[in-house]
Length: 252
Ligand SMILES: Nc1ncnc2c1ncn2[C@@H]1O[C@H](COP(=O)(O)OP(=O)(O)O)[C@@H](O)[C@H]1O
Ligand SMILES: [Mg+2]
Image 1: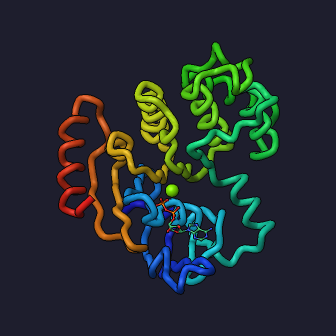
Image 2 (image 1 turned 90 degrees about the horizontal axis):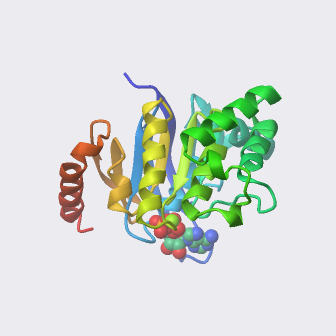
């Protein structure tokens, strides 16, 4: 039995001025440890809203969110920000790297602030991560001096420097070209193989096929899910075909 990492119970999210419509309409779901879970759905389906709700970045208007047996939707702001710093990692479409720090500095600073790891441990881990991510040559450059793909890989390194229990990613390849997209996806796949739980939102089929479990969100509800064995490059074409068939059946 897989460990339930995150559980949403009857989650609702309404926005003021939205005529009482629910962007998240009574969603109940479990996210399992070790999975590479993907949330798909058309633009405006509520994918980002769901990710922000589950990660405590945004409030919910009904329901409960549980992380490893703790009801985080009841947490006060301080408890929540501690949890985000110590237990959660985040990657977005934009890197949000600090522009006057080098890639390496961006990563270690997050580590110094985050984890209670010793300075030396943080620095070794940062070096190791940047190396694994193939950006060791660019590590002493500023974000503006490297490619979008290199910057995004550094952003992923920063997101996992504190050994997060879960890595949240919202369209992490949305701003990248084809080559950089594959590099960032390979990186995420490698982290997942090494045990990192990931929850990623995307509307890109090439990104979604990396997942082991794909949820389809529409009109504020999870309509269906598809599961895959762990990703292997050689099998990616068949996987893409299956995913496309599944999406067509859902009127994607
Ligand atoms: N802060 C907000 N205020 C009002 N409406 C919002 C806000 N954020 C999102 N929405 C609405 O919620 C719906 C879902 O948005 P979002 O979660 O960003 O979709 P997705 O990520 O799937 O494209 C959209 O109709 C959007 O207009
Ligand atoms: Mg979005």
